[in-house]
Length: 119
Image (tube, rainbow, N blue to C red; front, top):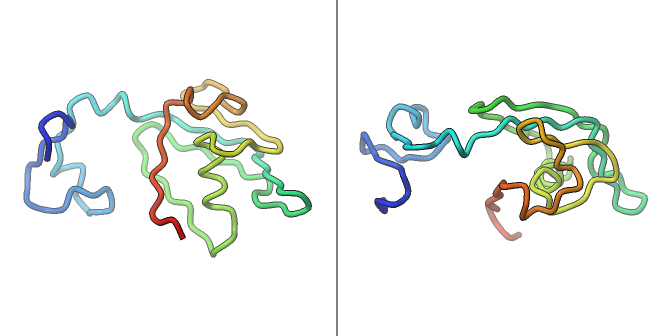
């Protein structure tokens, strides 16, 4: 791994978040600054007559691992795009570290999203 990432390997296992002991095998310098509390309240996204996200509410505490699980087309990716600011919600509220970012441009949210594929 490049030295400038702030990540130091402690073992030979893959350093992916999904790996069972990733927290123990990777030492992070300054990792706290990358973790934020996220709260979503009554989030709705409509595309014309189609409701893609319907009244979704949840919160993720700082440092917690969260999974959005559901069948294809249920609104998982759209919810993440709303949180990242890549889409604007029809209604609802998004908070990052207690700050309302619902109408804040994506570049000002200090959040990143990595796409698995471009299908």
